[in-house]
Length: 408
Image 1 (tube, rainbow, N blue to C red):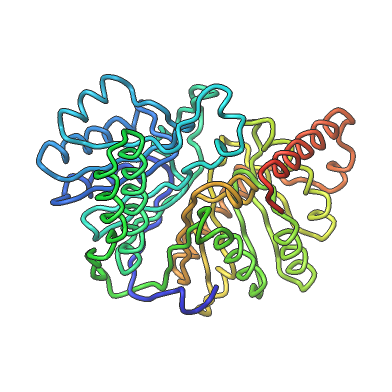
Image 2 (cartoon, rainbow, N blue to C red; image 1 turned 30 degrees about the horizontal axis):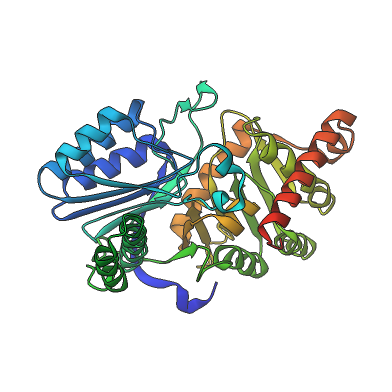
C-alpha cells in the first residue's frame, strides 16, 4: 500500500474471538470519561454480549456520551427491555438503513453497515470482523460446539483519530436524515453543520510501548472510498515476495483480484487460502467454489475450515521473513462483491513483523489442525448436482451485480 498511508507510533493488540474482544472493550468502556462510539453489523443480546451491553449502560448512567449504530438487517430493532434500559441510562442508538419485507430485495437495501468499530475517549479503538455475538451462538444455526474463528485488533496511536472521525461523521449524517424525515429542517441544518465539523477536535493516543507499529485505517464506502480496500489488497499481493496467507469467510474475488493472486502464484509466491468449510448461506457457500478451479490449477492451496464457522477477514503477507516486510490486515471486509462493492467496511493494515507473525501463527494452527485441504482432483470430480448448485449461486450473484450496475 502507499507508504504515505501507513503512519508510525501505534500499539496494537491482536484479539482472537469475541471473548477476548468483549473483555478488552468492557475494560475500556468502564474506564471511559467522556465518549464511547460503537458500530456493529450484529448486536445479539445473548450470552457473552450481555456484559458489553451492561458496560454501555453503566457508561451512559455516569454521564458518558454513548452512541451505538447497528445495521438494519444484521440487527434490526433492539429488544424492548434493552431499549428501556439504555434510554433510562442515556445511551443513544441508531439503526442504519432499516430494510424489512420486500424492501430487502431492492438494490438500495443491499448497502449495509458491515464494519465493526469502537472508539473510547478518542484514545483507544477496536476494529475487526467480530460482531457483538456470542462465540458459541449463531442466529441461524443455534448453539455451536466450537467457537467461531474471528479476529479484532485493539489500537492506540494516530489512526484512532481516523476511526473517531469516520464514526462521528456517520452518526451526524444519520442524525441529519432523522431530523429531515421529521420535517425539522432547522434541526437538520444544525446536524449538517455538526457533521461538517465532526472529527476535527479529537484526541490522539500516545504510544503505550517501546515497540510502535506502522499502521493505517482503510475504509470502503459508497462515496469517497469505493475501491480502497480491494485496491490495498491488490497492491499488497503484487508486492509479495514469498508468502500470501488469506483467511476469509465469504470469498468470491473479482476478476482483478483473482488475477493478482494468479500472478503471485506464477512468480513463485506461496499462496494459501483458509476459507469457509461449513455451510452457512446458500449464495456465499456455493458461489465461492466457482473460483476454486483456476486457483487450484495455478498451485494455490485452499484449506476449508471445518471446526466451526469461519468469520475471519484477515491476511498476512511475507509474515515469516522477519525482514521488516511483514504486512497484516484485520478487519470487516470479505473478499466478495457485497463487501467490496456495497457495504461500509473498515480494515486496519499493519506493517510489523511481530504482529504479522502472531496472526500468521493463529492461521497456521487452524490450517494444520482444523482445516481440510481441497485437492484439485477431488474438486474436479464433484457430483454433478453440486456443480450445478455452484454455477446457479454464482449466476445469481452476477445477476444481482448487474442490478446494482457494478462491474466486478
